[in-house]
Amino acid sequence: MHLNLPFREPLVPEPSCTAEPIGPFGWPETGPVDRPGAHASTTDQARSFDIPHWPQELTTLLGGLGIICCGPMTPSDASAEAIFACAERLDAPVLADPLSGLRFRPAPGARITSYDSLLRNPVAAATLRPDWVIRFGGTPVSKTLSGWLEGVPAILVDPGGRWTDPTHDVAARITADPTAFYRLLQADGIGNQGDRRSGGLWIERWAAAEQTLDRLARAFLEQSPWCEGHLIADLLERLPMGDGLFCANSLPIRQLDTWSGQSEKPLRVFGHRGASGIDGQSSTLAGLNAGRAEPERGVTGLLGDLSFIHDLSGLLLMERLDRPCIVLNNGGGRIFDALSQRGLEGFESLWRTPQRVQPDVLAHAFGLPHRSVDDASGFAQALAEAIDAGMRAEPAGLIEVRLDAELSLHTHRAFWNGVREQSIIETE
Image 1 (cartoon, rainbow, N blue to C red):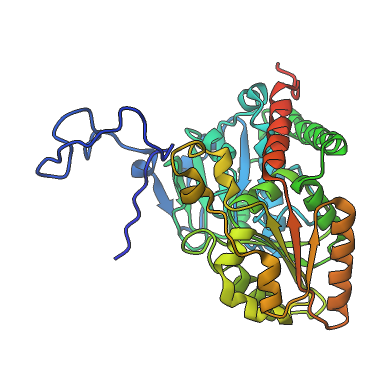
Image 2: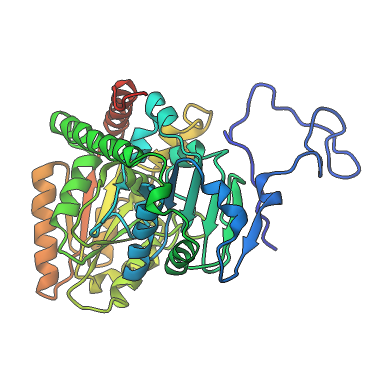
């Protein structure tokens, strides 16, 4: 049996956290509680459509200003083109998750990738709040984005009929792929140029904010100590065109979300949560390389130290990789340093969980080439050597990046605090 129990965050005890006697039907005997039927979420009232025509009852929902939010998915070229065509037709920006397959390819419309930082600015978050959202793919990586979208009516478009709706804001689900969804809009004249209410100003505002965030991020990295932001920018720049990047869950994918930006250079970004969030990462990296269609298009790994250590059996397959596995060694589960668990009793052993076994020892045990770096020049040299070794059909091995976790946390917070205080967008 597998039970999914959604708990409200924060998942830490409060001073008033005490046990309550359980009544005959599993409800606490005293105190205010939500009982079945006491309220109805948007999901309870949502409708599903798998018909070949546009549901006319959704036309009113698409009034006002909206956005297209693309979470984790693997779109074909036709699907990607259809999503941007929908955006053009509906006068809506495309917010592209790092795992959406839309950040690194040509984009004919307004593609927004800096939303996680942008929406930390209160004025920008309030000014850019949409009237509706069309969702493709899974739940986005960014909790900032998901929290900001709470209460915004959503149309979920999913060819598999899945219901990924953790905030219960989906008003309608349409069982269709992006291409079929675009044809629905076309066939019923939804979103014609003459129907646009913003005159293009909505798109321009989003695009200007994206450019401002890009300039702020570049300027910040130029004057800050070397951190994951520099590494990610350098890595994406140096990866061969058409290559893949497998990014582990937890902190690495969130740092990629913050610092990757966007590019016309085609790259493929992969990721998965596994059962516990970090398991099976090395094996997945090996599988992606073994199953690739073209030998010259390898997949580089970007893993945290815990993800790397959690999947030791996957290291048996790494001797076959011609792209490196990059391990960000910051001494454990450092994502919790930025969450409400930090400071609780037992935090070090129960949440951060630093490990005694180090990546260099494991690399030696499994016969893998190992390179250790702690600055920009060292990383650039190690990456070039690893890729060159792979091109010669030799194991690319492991690049261990030793990081000062406290400095990294301070650097990220300094950037977000700076964004929060900047004048990013003009109010009307």
